[in-house]
Image 1 (spheres, rainbow, N blue to C red):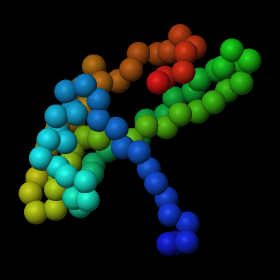
Image 2: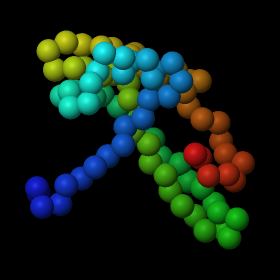
Image 3: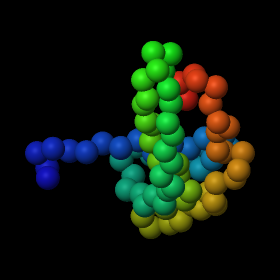
Length: 85
């Protein structure tokens, strides 16, 4: 529904950031991604949930740029109670 635009944040981490080289603001792209979820408990014992859209591949319409599947190093280790950012 154009009256209620939806904005999502895709993330690239570590060596995957280089996959954005050659892209410009406004380029139309196709994104393959994994949906990751994480639970976090605040110091006040409130449970919160965080969702990440981790990019696997980027394809500029008209040409492909494959960044490959995510490595196990790209997955953050279990938290120690800190906010994941």
